[in-house]
Length: 121
Image 1 (cartoon, rainbow, N blue to C red):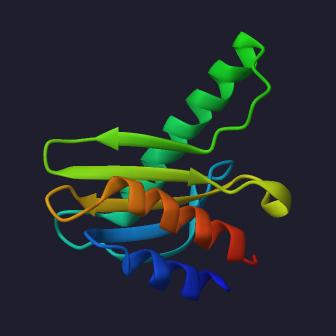
Image 2 (cartoon, rainbow, N blue to C red):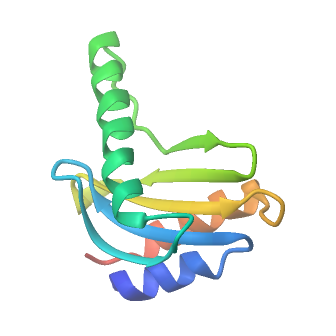
């Protein structure tokens, strides 16, 4: 699955508002879909790189060598799900913003995991 297909699949998840594939070393988005006036995906991608970097640094400081699967940020009306891409993809993560009233968090996590497994960058 290429980047465009992966992002379209992410947007097919119930409640999806926007999705992006982001390099957390550079903070740059490799692709994005959705968003709009209420959700600027470029700003969200850049901001969430700081979240990922902070968590990676914290785990290193604690000496924890386990891999981060995902990070969840819960807002009053939205879920923001960050799924780190494991394996040979380097420093990438999938970012998915969801409408909390329409989303099923368990299914969204499962969907992003499936997309991660099929993604070829």
